[in-house]
Length: 424
Image (cartoon, rainbow, N blue to C red):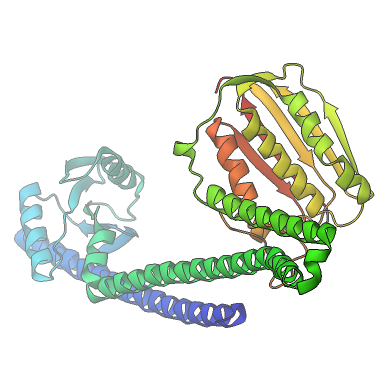
């Protein structure tokens, strides 16, 4: 399955999921609003009945018009003409709420407008913040009639309504699980696709690397099989030497793949010797002088570090610099300009290697240090390698408890910044 097909599947599946989630959200919201409306109506009916029953108990024959008012989402007040005993009020409230299936905690407060004060308040399972809120709302409320009223506050109204939704909460949970599973599946598909591309690119590269020496050995062997070759000892020696060189080249390639493929930081054996970073950089640069001059380029060093000696493994540090400089040359097709900087930081030395090459896209930057990973090039093999060099670099730097950072833009070059502490 190619990338276009995967992207189409992901796009269509995402659109479908977004549609399902949007629809579910719409119905859940409507269900919540309906449940809240029913709750408010039930509370209004309950408080209206409580008010009327209190009037009846007090033998008050006056008629109350709209005695209940909702002050906020979960705070209601009800008007009464006279005082009421708190426990009578609590009993009536419990009875009316139970009759209408309002099974949630509540608090009530009795307010006297004549004295402009709360004459009684009782709180059940409510924190201090909610208590203060209830009292402040009661104090701030100004009733437009003389008399008394009581207030009822539901601290867990939202939770109660959500619990009442039942099937909607369950269905939403199922959809959430589906979304998580979908995201996980897409992540696995993308990873598998990337691993497949890495594998194919690695196979193509290793096939290309091995094909040339094998072809050379095959052709040389055919020449050595000619009957008259024994009469040309110089030619015989040259072809035998070619076979030997190509065989060594094959052996080195195989050894390199095996060593780097099995490289693990916890199994590294690092030598502890006094080394000079500037000297190692100079030796590494010298190794590439002929190649870079042939390509019409230049390597410039800017040694700003004052303290350059540290304890480390000269071979591995040299290999790190060799790999980075080699990459800078390989990925700078024409007239490579490479700059190497050194600076001291508070606990070590910082090495910066900058080139003017083709750069690395953001998509590939996050994978560039992974083992066997190379920027996908299909069957184009103008740049040789197995995708192991940068993984090796990162492994060695981290073995010294250092850090490596990559800065790159396509067609604007690449910069690698290494920080290696002195006390390793």
